[in-house]
Length: 160
Length: 160
Image (spheres, each protein chain N blue to C red):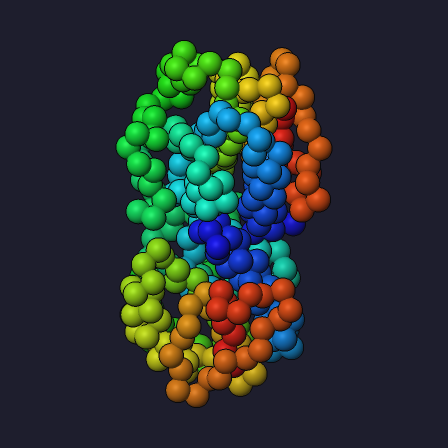
């Protein structure tokens, strides 16, 4: 399996899991969080598919495609080690859907980062909320959920 | 259609067209050219799927994933406006398969670059050879070929 195959599987799985989680949490009132904007491709997809749901984007510094840059009041700038605890004070455990693609090339670094942010993410999720991640997360209470048919196991994870 | 949808279609189409063109040119003895290495994902796929066929990579400056960096003697460094005419002197019209993903975010720039490199690419291709591109090219003699079933029209082009 080539790096191109792995990458396509990851992108297709990400979309399938996001679409699935968006539908499954559509009845919840709380906001949606996108952790990491990158070039904004996935945020653009969330914007297109999630109608008027409020999507807050957490990012260190914006370097996205102009089409896909969130408005200032929906952008939470800074290191997630600081901004996620602050978001917990602001929003409480109300977030309907959290998406994170931490994925760099270095699998060990991704895993270390997943361990670091998991306890910061877990208390934010509303009852019935879902977390979609390209990496395995380390939660106490949230459980791994079944993937939709289009997703490739190991390329995306859903927790709830 | 979101930017994520467009991107997935482009990646899936690129792989489908490359796999198709690789099979259709497998009987030819000439080399394979990859124009632009990027992070090396597509080159990695070509390496995995094309066995022992010689793949020359044209790139300005290598910034690829270490897994996907070609050996020095298969790397042709420099601006393609210089290196493609030089390659024509070295190889003549013997190239079995040429792949190019010029694709940046700026469609106008991509199109201008496609117009610029098309006449440099055209004389390199062997009889029976194929050119796979993520952008529409501007050839005098080469004709657009039908796409394989998995490819999305407009996201990839095959010429031969």
